[in-house]
Image (cartoon, rainbow, N blue to C red; front, side, top):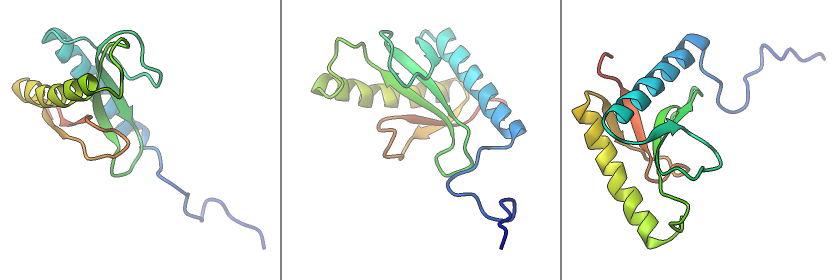
Length: 128
């Protein structure tokens, strides 16, 4: 019997349709711009952290429970990533990001994704 790959469900999460993925990319760009305007160093997410401390903006363009725009606070590489200083800073900065985004008109929350500890999830922009 021949298999029809189009009739079988795909394993794992599926990528968002192009219009939805484009909307996430626009939201991420607005967040990055607005955080820069507010005085925070913000840049696109990098899997390998750079030497720049600040906010990294991640776009997860999959259609699943953890898809969306995520913010990660990166400390300078001179701060041990698993040390108490790094942990304290990440906790405080996550709260600061949620509050800063609220002041800028965004809806955001502390994430509950175990793969993104201390990350902030952006739910909507000021115009949404």
